[in-house]
Length: 370
Image (cartoon, rainbow, N blue to C red; front, side, top):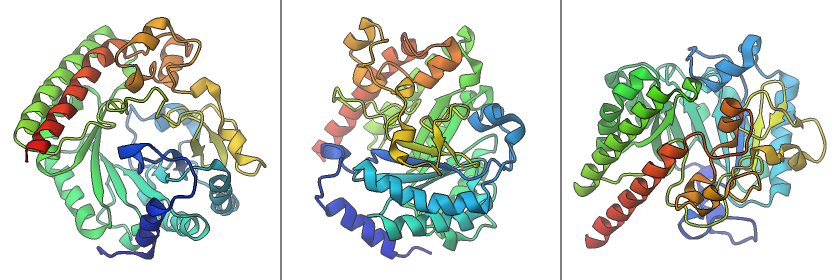
């Protein structure tokens, strides 16, 4: 496929324009500051026991957006864009399995490009259907993240090669939730990803909760992972740490929070309801048929921000505060019943964020010598 679409040209113009809309500083100017996260359907080819959707929607796990709601969504996205005053926006397709309805992905992207300045297109998939989908429907998806689930690395490689050959993506990411199986093979996944030029993203298994044994093994494995990444950096590989672990942005050194949670995330469910948090499928703030759309996604409960008054002084003085920002509010709410207090991954973040920052410093030093 591999073609320069009109939409790609439009994105380049969008990045170049200076129009007064909010954007990131310096190297972060192309980081999306507003995210449309669309769950058009909960239908899926799998039932992974660590999936947020599977664990939270219960009997609704086969729900798919009806035609009336989908038609309204195509109008609603440009309406929100007009008032959000953000320069770089992204549309992410999640589920369920988005590849079950690529025709709808195309319609959403066509509408966004027709009625806005353009948006980055992202797709999260288990890639079970890469052999049979209509790739023309996905011509304006720039980034594809493939969940390795429980397939072999060899099968993952085959699927990602198909994506590379048949899509217009400019970057691919491997994501793995570190259940017992993936925790044991995370270093092998990393070697495969780094050596083939893929980005990596790892998440702890939230549904293991606060289990001491699991979290100790997770921290130990994260240290082994950092050791491995350091070796690759020394060899000259381009190692990326943004979103690498638990969606953290370790290089963020501004006091303002980079996380849009509860502020600039427009998450839409199959029934047209909306919410402020990508992980929480039970907390709803309105629906796409209501007026004043931007106000409907605001929720201070989910603000991922170290300046929140219910965080301890320890968080506000921590050297890792600009990356951790006090920890994910949803995770704290789920596991402790409150958003106050330290991150549920505090002990991990305190040890790993400084290591990730040192890795980035080492990579930059190596690049400057070339």
